Length: 66
Image (cartoon, rainbow, N blue to C red; front, side, top):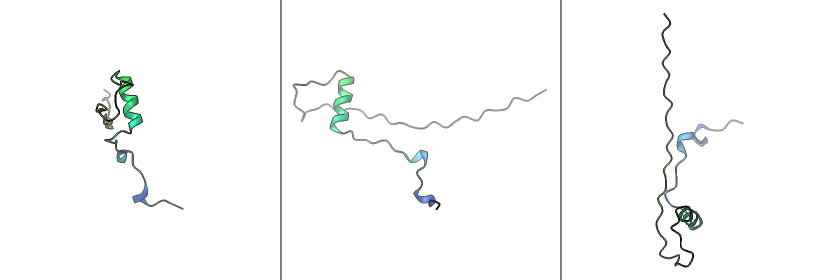
């Protein structure tokens, strides 16, 4: 059975999330050495979410043979 076109996931349709879970934020802050184990979770620092964009491939021009 074939799948309807509207249900297929395209490569460009994958979006990056703009909110991290608490565990992801803690892991990111540990990477940046900004996480303090003794500090309160309520005032946790913000982390920037990197957006991933797909680059389009450049067309290669064929060299003319002489």
